[in-house]
Amino acid sequence: MTKILKSTKILTKKEPERRLLLPLKKRAGRARSGEITCRHRGGGVKRLYRILDFGEEKLNISAKVIALEYDPNRAAFIALLQYQDGEKRYRLAPKDLKIGDEIIASEKAEIKIGNRNKLKNIPVGTQIFNIELESGKGGKLAKGAGTSAKVLAQEESFCHLEMPSGEIRKISQNCFGTIGQVSHPEHRFEKIGKAGRMRLKGFRPTVREKQ
Image (cartoon, rainbow, N blue to C red):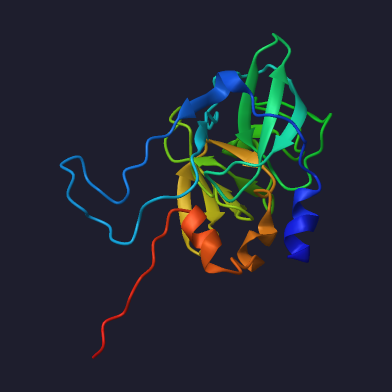
């Protein structure tokens, strides 16, 4: 439990931004027809979905980090940004990002934690996350807590990335990636501790049949 407390000390004690919340309907493991397609699901604590910006809609506009928050729908923490035009948005928070930092999404942004660049402008050896597969479609790769990919090489119109699994992938240099590593890497070491916490997460008991 000590590790959990240490990781949450960086979080801001505030209510989530109401304009960036959506209701999240639970289906308890059922398909649209009502038939159970995934067993042992149901109950759990009510949650509101946080609308995250995985793309580059706010290009070339700097933003200030005004809060770091817990998201009940994912293992990583999220950052609340306020842009120069006054708009607020949530984004995945990288490790070591601090309140008051300024970040930007731009084709040739400075290489620093939280900035979002095109892959062709990111130096070899840099850790990145929230990586696009297709230009303009938003981040799809390396979004889990503590994950990141490593830039291995720049070749013609492709960037070679070493994924968290160890796989090497070629991705178009025109795709974007965010500098750094996804926050909350301690998540993999956290222990549930008791059955009650699993029930709060929406997992019902599993009974094994005798052989």
